[in-house]
Amino acid sequence: MSDVSGTETPEADVEAEPTEEVAPDPHVLDDLHTELVARFGNELGVAVLDQAAVFGMPVVRVRRIDWRRAAEVAKGALECDYLSFIAGIDWMPAPKEGGDDAGSDTSAPVQPQETTYGAAGSDGRFQVFARVQSTSRHWGLTLKADVDEESLLVQSWVPVYAGADWHERETWEMYGFVFDGHPALRHLYLPSEFEGHPLRKDYPLLARVVKPWPGLVDVEPMPGEGADADAEADAATTEAAT
Amino acid sequence: MSTTNPPLPEFDIDPRAFRHLADAQVGVELDTGDMILNLGPQHPATHGTLRLVVRLDGERVVSADPVIGYMHRGYEKLVEFRTYPQITTLINRIDWLSSFANEVPFIDAAEHLMGIEAPPRAQYIRTILTELSRIATFVLFLGEMGLQVGALTPAFYGFRDREHVLNLIEAATGVRRHPHFDRIGGIKDDLPWGWINETRTAMKTVFDACDVFEDLVAGNEIFEARTRSIGIIPPELGAAYGVSGSNLRASGVDWDLRRDGRPYLVYPDLDFKVWTHPDGDSFARYWVRLQETRESARMVVQMLDQMPAGPIMAKVPRIIKVPEGESWVETENPLGQMGYYVISKGATGPFRVKIRSASFSNVSILPWLLRGVFVPDVITILASLYFILGDIDR
Image 1 (tube, each protein chain N blue to C red):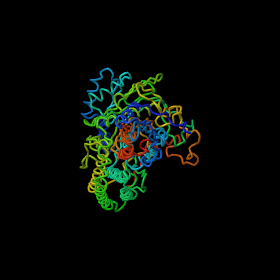
Image 2: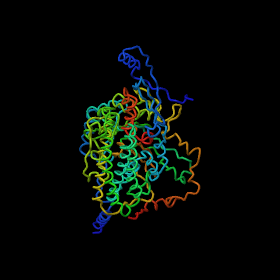
Image 3: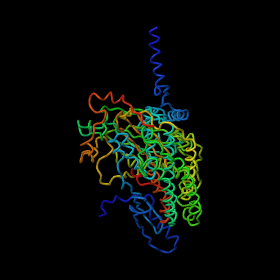
Image 4: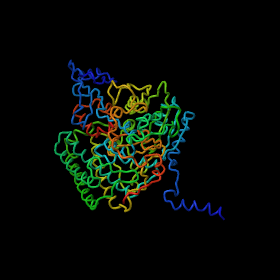
């Protein structure tokens, strides 16, 4: 008897809690995108390293030597005629700004210090990712490829998507990726004499280096500040006035 | 003084080819040497600081190279040093004519990661404010476009009629331009008393304004002469360049994220038409925005009729920590597709945010589009693409 009641009680609790009930997997792909991923996998074969679904959106990681072929397949066989963006990711953990004092500096959120890789994984620190979509079939997918830390070479998409030009120039100046086959890698946003790659994690936010955060002096500590208050603050919820 | 200028672009068409062509047409030996014209960075047609280095052969553009970045504020770096609630302040300034519409996709992306859904009333108010932003942006465009072809009157009408909509946004959010009103889990405040009736009245003036612009600008013979068959964007090339929104629909591409994308806000509940135009020229872009302004006003009226009662905030933790994960949310903003790729590592701020802004891609087609057009048409093409500098430079 006690076993039966013991199993029933948590279930009743779950039903009583409105936020816990019937949680369908938010990541599951719809039929259209399942077909898209299947067709993409058929066309590329071993070039697909990994795939994942993120809130109904497919993410496919391809080999770096097949980066341009992935674009050709996407544009040709999958009718993804629309290029949304090309950008880079630096998976290195963000250095703790301001050292040990960062905990009270509410202006800079402290990021976890272990290296983790997002959807579909990564082999190393740098990745290039892009999103292509179809204006006729109304589907789209995100493509990722690892970038070698030494050579930083990536195949250019300019021969496939004309609009890749500016996106690759931006990624080049922000991350230093060299797009092989790009007609002219010139600075886009930054002055032509600018040195460094600002969106890399080891590039400091210079405004913070030359001047401390002005709100730091008399800022009231956040409710979760301090050693003991962490669990309490996490549990605390607020309901706004309706 | 000019040593800081970036190097001149590589021309993929030999300018001499045009010179020979011009000689052949005139039939006399004229040395029409190329002239380099700096359009901007403070040219009125560029709404800010876009610089175009235009190489001219007589009146014809041989090549055009947009130089952007004069207003680059580095938002993708800055957001890594901010918490989620602070970031809406920054992203308000990306497309400053339709600020509220910028907040929606970012807040949606954070809500997806946290597994929070805003209550229906909050979703309706968000949608209404987004559509009001669209009307405010487009009405200004409908007037300003007239200004670029030399008609001064429509510009005043544009600013006047936009004021009706800005007053509504101010009444609901407290601010005219940068509301900072969207919150994770809902919105900041409920609508003020009497706002719904006020909005109905204002929508009537929007319909009237559209009629005025249709007669005054779109039906004007000079305007048609200046915009028809000028600056044609082929649909395939436009898509490959990432041109989106009304600019792509004016090229006959029937694609609107409000209808065809992943469902967001309350657009699945609404009955609306997606307008397209087959021509793809400057006139088509004007015409499509004119129709979309009316459509938006119709949608606002529909939403006022269906507005549910209820709370405007879901339960959210006091300290917003977004669980680890990735989320991409794209929305149909007034200027085109806007999207945020948010990568979170479980902290109070994002690890990386890729901001996909519409004007950046819309303008990237300019080197192709301006090749071979006449100088006065450069201005109308720039105006008809309708970009916001903050949306290019981020």
